[in-house]
Length: 591
Image 1 (spheres, one colour):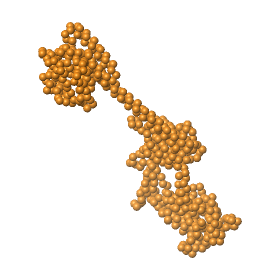
Image 2 (tube, rainbow, N blue to C red; image 1 turned 90 degrees about the vertical axis):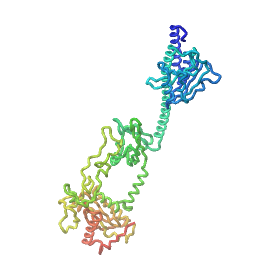
Image 3 (cartoon, rainbow, N blue to C red; image 1 turned 180 degrees about the vertical axis):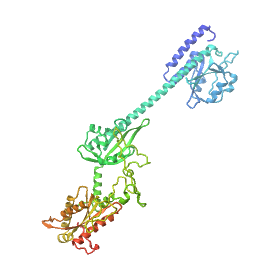
Image 4 (cartoon, rainbow, N blue to C red; image 1 turned 60 degrees about the vertical axis):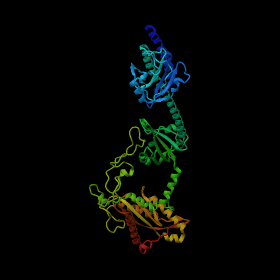
């Protein structure tokens, strides 16, 4: 190329560069681009052989493409394909070589700089005669860099067809070609990465579509109810998606349910439980309203579906029908706490209700501003009992059921006193009546006259054993059932009528004064005394009544013993069914 006139050389070089660069840009893959580079160097720039060593991810260089104008009988440079040289060996060779602009020329007399791990091939060309003749061991390298200055690879060319070391024009053409080759290789790599990314994206999208379809089918065709609740925006807490099983369970159409929130559907008594249920892993058994106005027992189990980038997306709630199990549990609980014959609460349930109403602190010690007794047991705060976080404790996880205009919050708890929950209203024994009154009860604490309290009315049937002995147990059972019915008819709403044992009944009447308690006792007596018609026979029993009073600080045994003593006093005074001493009370239990 250097033997021609300068204008011809310049024009030919430009034409050659234009053609080989066009070939570079026409390649569609990285392998095709590398092959275009070596072929362009051979056919367009006047060299007999060329090779490209590409930088691998680990930094070493591997021979990725070779080309020679005429294939050698002994394999030629193609034997280099796939061979790897370390980055350090290549860098040392580039440093020792002569700098021809961006090119690097390593003459044969500096072959010692070529490390043994650098792939090399020496042709069988003629030995040089003049100083600028090409030696078979000469090496000409064109490093190729990315736009950011990172080494992409090295183009090695060998045996110029002129037999001379390249002149200025050939060097410039090789520099320009290597620059274009760098751009082409960078673009090819970018295309390859984009194609791999697109392939991964398509694969991920296919997997996502398959996952969404699996979720849709599992959601829609689940045998139990499923609901998706929004966690963000104006629709927070709203049911955005429900399945057919939930629609059937609640008897509501899908369109109607999607306008509801769980807080709209839950039974009022279960609302606080719902709000205490954690969004992540929360579980609650409560009642949801059906379209016909009834309530359905369900078990809610929550899980938060989160996006890796945006965090929690929505709340997935599994709604299981537990109506049959709950009904069975309630039946068992009712049997355990109620008398099988009369259906009234039994003695254990009566004691449980008293325990819920009373606290260990005597009323005098519970007045605000007075110090509690030193030995008063500490009770958990109302917040700890109803799920509200206590002071200094971390707040519970968000429940996800809040309305869009703000979370449903607990009402503020009143300050707590030692020994009693903060919401507790102390039971105080009303002031005693004048001595000699048969209705007076045991008093604990100083309460002003006329104060209302918790009355315990102990009723013992007189003559019931005689009915049992004369007419049989079936008649005795019928009498007890009728007595229970009559007592329930005359007590106030909210009062408790319980059967203690045999022929003994107890009535709990809260928030009642002494005079009202006397009136209630009169109504109880009036309900029991009229004769009963059983098996076409008139049966009559009497009753002895005693009124005791329950106050905070009293034990349950104290309360019941007080009322029992008052009842026994009346029985003895009125000459009821004879009982010579306390040890002779032995009424048989009917049934």
